[in-house]
Length: 393
Ligand SMILES: Cc1ncc(COP(=O)(O)O)c(C=O)c1O
Image 1 (cartoon, rainbow, N blue to C red):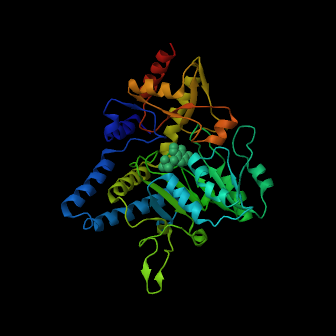
Image 2: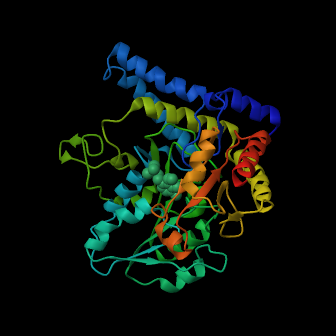
Image 3: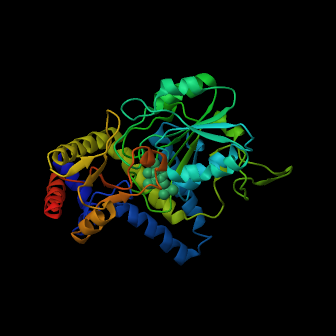
């Protein structure tokens, strides 16, 4: 990506004009002006023409968004549902895989998102067991170890592909090959992957994949997408239904035969119009190019952090994403985030709750997190490093 292209992206992004330096794209990234306009335009239509009356226009935009999401993930549009959060998307698919029976086994990576583990409580209450797939020597989920765990009681393999607490990229495709060979349901939490790196649901062999809209996709808060493989859809029986997910027919309420069985008839068309615009922008820019730029900038940051005394980096695995977890000697991660915030530099900080199994296994209480996007410049990196040096003293 040329410096001129980056400049164009930044010119089109209000958050790049406001004087903040944003390194919290894994928390939520900065929407473009066009995404903001798409949201406001739909809200104005609703206020002007009547909220339900503006719904016809809104529905067209939602279908556009669905096609754009399908294009991004290499999936048919009909396999995409929109929901209000990544955790909701995951939880709905998980509950729909029930009923859970005593003895059912759920195999998870050690880096599993805390919200997904929280959702699994319903299965645990029914007598199912959650078991952690061992990691290899680099700290990534080990497909060979998974292979040895498989038996007839494994009902789900679940992987958080790019964990929230660092740069690890788990071997999602190799895990998918094990799942497919044994005919076991395979869910991927791709909340930190979608929009940051290429995601091809066919190559991954996943049955379900989900992501929030607000992170690397640069969509608005309160949006998420859920992919369900069409052949797998009949295995999912959502407990929550309404007149959209199960429309009235001559035979009574009939569950939809596409991913919209996970949607609700009432939704924010404005936010989905914004998400649709963000998805189209991501496709236009090309996610391969986004990924290339993310790797370039995060590589520079990692190098600079390695050279800085007092920093410990917490990357696992061999290949790293644009999420960089670290601690600065003598600093609480949340306090460091707050103090950088006072300098108008945004980073993230995570405690144990978001990735409890991994944080506990590594004895980490909290980590500071820098996450990058093609919107970031080398100048941003210099400002961040200078601020860290200053705070380190
Ligand atoms: C890997 C992963 N999964 C899920 C989530 C949560 O998504 P949401 O807040 O939309 O429920 C996050 C958020 O940080 C995440 O990093």
